[in-house]
Amino acid sequence: MYKIKRFKWLWMFVVVLSVLSMVIFISCSKSAAPQEVTEKTVTAEETTTTEAPAEKVTLRLFTISTDESRISIMNDYIIPNIEAALPNVEVQFEEGGGGEDYNNKLKTYNSTGDLPDVWYSDASFASAIINAGNMLDLNPYVTEDGFLAKVSIPEALQYRDGGIYILNSGVDAFFTPRIFYNKAIFDECGATIPETFDELIDVCKTISAKGYVPVSTMGKGGWAPQLYLVQTMITVEDPQVMLDLLADKTDFTNPVVKNGLGRIETLAKEGAFPEGIALLDYGPAKEMFTSGKSAMYWMFSWELPSLNTDSNIGPDVDFFLWPSAGDAYDPNEAIQYWGSPLNGYAVNSKSEHIEEAVKLAEFCAMQDALFFQSTGAPIILDTGVETTGQSDLMKKNVEQFLNCDTKIASITLNGMDAATNSEFATLGASLLTGEFTADEFVDQFEPVWEENTYFD
Image 1 (cartoon, rainbow, N blue to C red):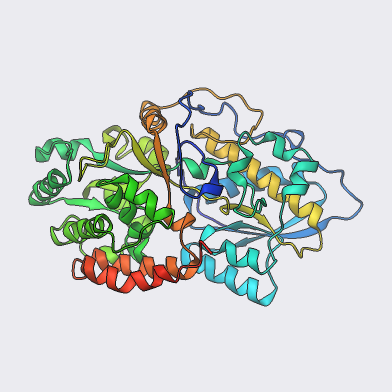
Image 2: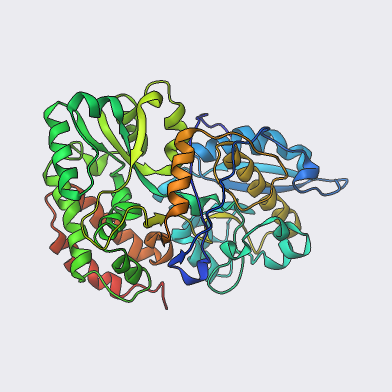
């Protein structure tokens, strides 16, 4: 049985792009955000059904087991509902861990020909599986059985070759990095919301002087710089440079890019991060904030629901926008969004039970949608369930995101191959120490960027 801890986790938000451009979409819809789901599960008829044969087929399902949302989706949605939805399938659940451990297992399975029938795809390694011919193009299957008709923005699932290799709720494209902060600690320290990067440094010094850690975030493996911090520190000076970098129209020698890297170096040297930040894992980073040891928690908005309802931090949690480092940046106009057409449930093209595996992927994507809908997060998959309610903090997050006209895709998912991504993370971890300079980063990473095959 799938043994995993149960957490309440996650949140995320808004607006999906046509992923073929791999950069951004501008002029996002300003429609009202979906709200909290009134019921958690649906019947088999409301998801996908097949007539049970005399004998069941066995499928392997490989999923991330360190991400709190994935844990809840598996324990509270997939496992309880799978028998009713897919009576002809016996599922063997396999825990994959997370991060590099998860990708390393997929790499091994891909090279040995032992990929599971269905797995949760991570964009950082998915292209290698596609290139090996081991990931099924789901387009003809989901078109024929009507599943694609439930997707409001099918382009969000399309890979650059036009194929559809994963199924998801579309929620991944709605996450953005936020500065969550403890209002009580800010009041105690006499700290005010910074509007410029220089003011942010001053706030960090003020908070540190009162005995608190200014900023908590996950540094282990270079996660924060890799997934949002480098991109954010470039964007806050000039979003257009970040767009150009994502489109392969500039490189890491660009002065604005160097300045962004330098801001991370400055934050580290000024003591904004906790000691040992480069080794700080996800859970401890969050606990540092919820336990009142740090004043700020820099993380994607998928954390908002759990933070908002946390008994320790909930009443005092809020977020503010990324302070500016240049006149070209307006925090209400430009924002990063998470998401990739390669994050979601994939099917082994060599599975012995293709039809059933596709149905399992569809079922899992629908359960994802129900879970995220229950948090008030926007999705692109029609669950058939009416939604109501949303916290004030969620509404604030959604509204601000929707009102940003320039939404910039995450470069780590949409602009780097696996090898480039790995080096990006490694050097990012070094940058967090404060002993590794922006110039050293550029000198070591630029040759790797030039060899990046993502745009080939």
